[in-house]
Image (cartoon, rainbow, N blue to C red):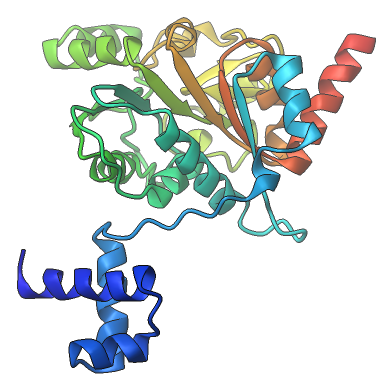
Length: 317
């Protein structure tokens, strides 16, 4: 370690462990208070500090218990979102990162998708003391437009957190033709990454909504005719595979052109963490849970209530 790293470690220990103020740390180390402030931030950025807030509202609620019972989930955590609904994705990311860290062990392979929610999970991951972890990209993520998926940034942050090696799919998620997609998937490296995705120990994923500004609709993969057909049949997407109200792939001509694990592959993974929220995703989340795609769930309370009501209405009809 260089001198700055050593100073940062001294500063964060005095500040967080000894409980000294920044002025007291500055006096102890013979530095200015602004320098100490920068060293503390540097230490946090380097992963020397991990701050965990244990909010009982995230797990200890009747809503979480009902979700576990109705959908047979192993664990449900509620992201606490301000009443004005701001920073939903940020709060989902914070709780999602904490739940993921609890479920990754030494030697695990972790399958990861992409999107705004997954990028939020990645940004909220702190450094974990794990060894032998590998991060597997579960679907292609190259965009044909200026809209970015942050797939590379997401994978990189996951690897930094777990000290892991990345297995990536540097490809579009949907190809123009089945023939080209099959040819690409036959390449040994691509074939191996997809196989590793199928065999992953943990998968962390979200669901996409069906709306004009949805990310998957704006990456240059789909024609206007295809978008209209999807909107008429699908309630959302999982791993960029469009699902109907029963959780089944419902656009076969696109499914055949999609690069990554299948919905059946996802169901076969031991631990499947779904991180999702928002009114526009209620139908997709409810279909995903009812179809058994998740074993663990991170969701906000407002969306959770709507999901349960949707299931109750279905049962009553």
